[in-house]
Length: 114
Image (cartoon, rainbow, N blue to C red):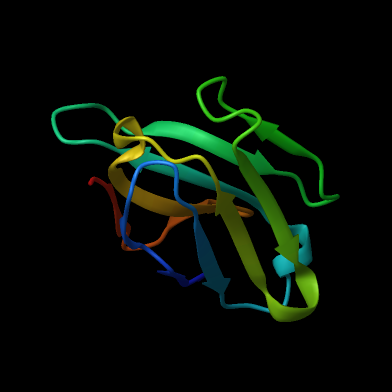
C-alpha cells in the first residue's frame, strides 16, 4: 500500500507561483511513475504532468512552459513548480502514483484569484 500526502496549495494571485509537494510512503518510490492531476469544479479530472521512474517528464499542453514536475528519490517526494498561474489553473490537485496499482492522494486546493 502506497500513501501519498500533498502539501503546498493555497491562494495565489494571477501571475504568481506555487510549489506543490507529494510525499510518498514505501521503499520503492524510485520505481513509481508519478503524476499530478487536477479537477476544477464541474469538470473531469485531467492530467497535468507525469514523470517516469527515470525522471522523464510529460506535460499537458495547457501547462507546458509554466509548470515543472520533478522528483527527489532520496526524499520520496515529487514536486510541481507552477509559475504564471491563471484563474484557469484553479482546481483541486491530486498526486498519483503507479506501481503495482494506482494510488491517489487526498487532493489539495489551488486557487488563483485577485
